Length: 490
Ligand SMILES: [Fe+2]
Image 1 (cartoon, rainbow, N blue to C red):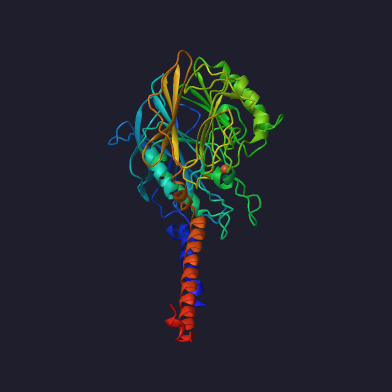
Image 2: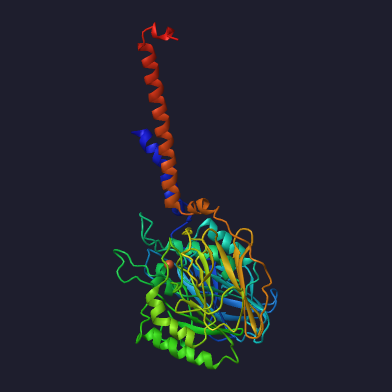
């Protein structure tokens, strides 16, 4: 009996690994942690959010030099009652910021202590080059740490995160469906980026924390921890909003709420797109982000969200949206400019005056990859299912953009393309071919699957040893029973 359970011990340890690595069920103490910058909808303002265990006071100090934090603002605080979580979430604004300028800041107070001093850059108001990180589907895996480490050194001005953030709600985790510690673990992991680069979100299905015994929890944790602006874009919902950054107008939608004709979300989107399209002189580039892709050719993932395509694609085409950023399928895919499944331009990675949006799936932020292959529709221009990584959307100048997808471990350029208004712009990098060799190692990023695989291997090894021992024993007994004269045959 003991030997039987000994076989299961490694897998039980593996399955409990996330709990063992989580230090406590709430923030570690009253020093500020999980710092997160976000845009407010006012270009001269930056919002900083942080978490403490119990300390309710504190604020932010900032300035143009780390040694001279000569501005300050008090924070406000709140908490929420879901996921068995306790802690204090603080928000504070840094206001009257100049465009295209580096600032330094810290949060906390003298009583409970201060964070380290961090820095950030505000959006330039002209056509200066900016770099926007693009990511989705992260979790707290080793791969997520690699992706975050790579993003933190990528000289980013902003990150657009298309949902499925901490995986606090995870129906594959059989011991607990919602685990509030995961939000803290993710906040600490992602702080390496978010303390220095503002991050703007679209909500994913894993933020909708529906579970037995938690009726109505829904998006409570997400809404409490992520503070997205919506009133500045005349939206009455935090799940859909828009903002300007550099020469971009960026719209964030929810694929987890009603988007059909007549819905509040679609009505708001139509109005915001019309306003943005009329403002192309000031903000010539139009980007839309949401979680579930309306174009995905993954054969082992979720594939295209056809209802979403049916409801929204015509609006995106009508108002000349340039790029659509999504996740949900845990792979990377890029379409050609496409309208109603018909690519409008192919055989190039330098697009000029594209007639329809290019759709991107960047579900490679750290959660286990789906692997598998693409069904290779005519609209799919690039597909990679075996490598975690992140995208960088770069404003090259007023007339041109470049998008690059980087491998997280080596920084390899796995896909790159440009979009321009006037004349073809050659990409600055050359994409490298991808391989499928990392699929097995990706499986081990998921503790449940890693545990099951290890169990199978151990069980097979034990079975093999026992079969060999039984066979050897039987052979020995058979040899003992053989008449001596048979041994002389031959
Ligand atoms: Fe998802």
